[in-house]
Image (cartoon, rainbow, N blue to C red):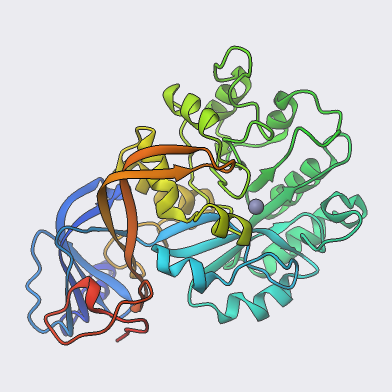
Length: 408
Ligand SMILES: [Zn+2]
């Protein structure tokens, strides 16, 4: 019988919530227009020109706002026990429209269980993880992430296979030795577990690696290099000619992916502007959020979207790079990253303000933009979070009426 698929998707007793009149952007399905979104239980029940909300428990007026799939931040650090400098995901992600965060290797196979118990299982935000190729993860120490004796591809792959719903790949970062041992071990773990590798690699570590070509050659299609607009990581733009380097063009053609990874030191206006002008946008817009970047630069996903829009990216194009693209990169699409009927009701609602906005890069250089995206509502399977200061008021309800903790 084939009828089951669609029948169970449809609400049997009306909607729990209808978002009315918002401008829906769901790049995975080419949707970019005013529509209504109906939620039943924990699922998207309907996306249509007009949904009669009769019987809906809650109707939210979203006119003038943008409604998108809950955002996916591919690069964040949220495992506290490994480092002093991490964030609790619910404090920073949900208030920014981000319903899924992927921890970028703060834990390794030896520390993942603690990460899961102390953070992942306690967060409302969906927390996934790249596992560091170093067993101890990013735990500070003399050798840190250069500790080759603690880089065990088999143990890393085994841990990934033990938690396939939570661990999405392998991370290598901050490697200070000569050669490519860390990257090769990470790729081996990725091969064993059939998952992608996220690479964060500095050219200023005295490693003896003189070209990016070698590094990119080791990376497989589907692996990601983060911090793409930091010219101390990738020579994306040649310093002399200011042209995109052949190596990154070829790597992208081969299927290597590039993540923004803004962070506290990796978004530089000159590199980003040159790259965007030459048609080299990020595949995914990860924030690399940690206390340094969140406090110094007020970085979050909407902030990164606004910055890329100031360099010519359209809003639907930016939304693609924080929904379907990262979901595909971590092999989680269409489970997340779309408003497709029947999928989990992860939803973000934004305002796009116009005016003159100064956006700082990682070295505090400012660039003016004319549009600024700010989140108004985040919803994970009917558990809503709102920016602080918003209060619940009686019906009729608008997005701004809700307080934290709204649910079915
Ligand atoms: Zn990072």
